[in-house]
Length: 108
Length: 270
Length: 156
Image (cartoon, rainbow over all chains, first blue to last red; front, side):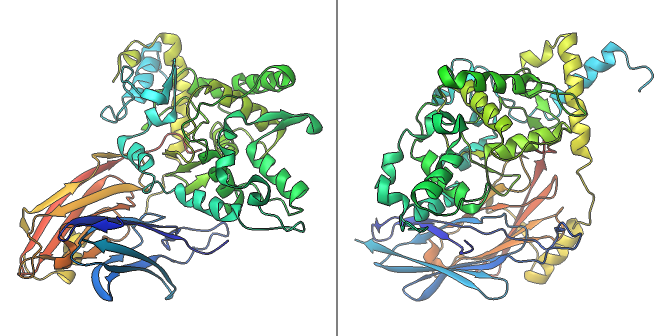
């Protein structure tokens, strides 16, 4: 099992203008490039270096990560809900692999 | 210092040991810990730093839940020659509610104890005709976490009499037996000194109710036997194997020590 | 310190010594290594941010003492109306005592509603955490807090 599983929690619905909290968590070792393996050689760096949150196609929040972000990175941030729509969350790994997750919110 | 090491110096050393970081929340004896305390027995939760407890309290923030999700996915996945999944026999995972509290338990056909990891693997080999999962594999940890998590909050209740009695006795002996170059038994930390500090760590009672547990040190989830191995190595003793008879007996004794404490899997610990 | 610890008997104290031996085992695990310092953080800030940081506007939420340097919870909030004309653009998180000072940068928009985020970071030891906020009007704010990272006595 090597597939990386992202998790996101957002409220299903919100009132117009309400600021909601978005929580995200992704399973990842965040290999720093500083550790040595059993053979004495450094284990190459492999981290998630960027997280993006788009809403209805537009970028609303992003974060750049360095190796000092803990394993299984957790990130919580906020969003002002003005209209219903769909979030797209994207985690980008060193080497270019991407992990995505979508979630909908209804604004009334 | 060595030459003049009087009894007072020894006392000073012990104090230094406990005073290391006085501000670090040395567990407050009088605090009401609710379900995390039963009589004089306290979950490792009560010895953890507030930030670590907060990480466990929020199901979403708890990184151990990533392993529960792995288990959830595997629950419905057919594997092996019989073409069955866990769900084929057990239906929904809610059927596992209450199951975890009685493990490890005596199994007549094995004439031995069996822990939950081994029970899951026996299901795989006997019923699913699938390969065993390795100890500490993502799959076995994930399924064990998932199954135990169904009993979240239920009191631990292992059987230690009848057929289990000799195994219980063996586990108790292991717990109290000095071992390793440091010549220490489990009890010397976890029975005599819970709440005191080992350098900057607060010693806990060594309870098993939160396992498999997400350890900050491990950056991941590990089994109780992995923790046993770590403890044994710390006192410079050789460690026993995963699923060994020695650790099965010890697991039974440790789970009995935590009788009544709630299942917290996946707990978050330092 | 609790009462129990103050009233250790001699016998318990002797037991304590054997426990102390354990700490020496753990001490051997601490390998010194290269790390950043305050100057490296300043250089990193200069590289990323125009203007001189002022105090204020930033609230930090960090433990005074972290149980384990692998996973230290960190949260911040920058005081801002988060409107189209006045919002927090980017917040940078630095650690003075890590192998390299950068930890993460957070890019906000007016749609964020509030300039608050929380995450978990690695800390190589006791050190200052530095947070720098760039506002849409070009102003820069900075806040700093020390976190003590305890040295484990029991590896396991």
